[in-house]
Image (cartoon, rainbow over all chains, first blue to last red):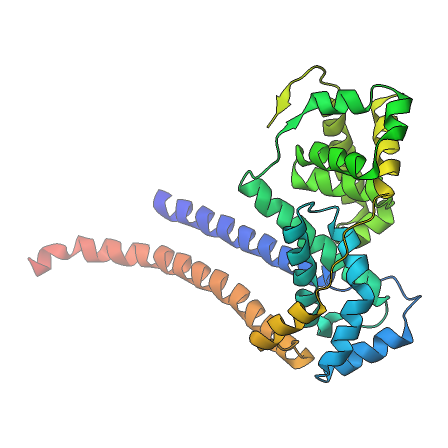
Amino acid sequence: MVGTQSLRLDVEAFVGALIAESVRALADAAYAQPQDMTVGVSAGDLEDVERTRGGDSDAYRRLIERYQDYVAGILWRFSRDRRDHEELVQDVFVEAYLGLATYRRKAPFQHWLARIATRVGYRYWKERARRRKMEAFNLEQWDRATENDGILDALEPDHAATLLYNLFEQLPPRDRLVLTLRYLDQCDVAETAQRTGWTKTMVKVQTLRAKRRLQNLVQRTGTELIR
Amino acid sequence: MNWEQKIERLAVRARAERPPKVDVAQSVLEMLTAGQAEPLTVAERFWMWLAAASSAIAVPTAAIAFALYVRSAGPLSGIVEAISWATK
């Protein structure tokens, strides 16, 4: 009897996990299509999307050429390695092509691509975090760069971007994502929710946590090596 | 200046950076042609989701059926054990 009860508990736990997984899959499916943006849809984009769906590769080439710099700009926040960066941009356009049926023409094509780019970049970070492929970062760099206003304002843009990239890299990918969108892409809660597919509440909670972790990180002084 | 103001100031500098130019049109089209990838049609997506939903229902149903079977088999196995002397 005890064995049967234990089996029933196992089954209930299994069913619970399965339902949770299904809900997550459905949420991911919803993530594939923006819901509340209806302005700024370009007629040229719509025509090229329709032609691409009809098998016209030149139309897709036009879409890529129109948006590759935009997508490259987004993904430069996710990888500062030129080879990885280019591969990520390619991945975005391959995913966009394969998921073209989910683009329902309510939102600008650009916004739809931004969501895919964010998803591709986030996946890249998670993969790197899983393999623990992180650049070594020394807090001394942070201390030196932020010592005073003069040094901060004279910092070259690429040095500033690299410093922030390396600093955020010390945090879990979720924290890194909200901080990158908040500080570098200047996304508010609604925009972050659209880009990530998370709820606004989740974005707020995640941002608070990420900021707390970031604060703990930068307030360590001296030359401690973070790995 | 607190830590967040420093981050904001750095971010302002970082936003002035120009990302590297890329030209991926040709390589993407080659990848798509090589893989013979086709965008999924609405019908294909429907069948895909139907298959996923069927699997999601079938697996727990099988698990529950197994649990019920084990429970219902309990008294039966008791009876079989009780008369096992007859088979010896």
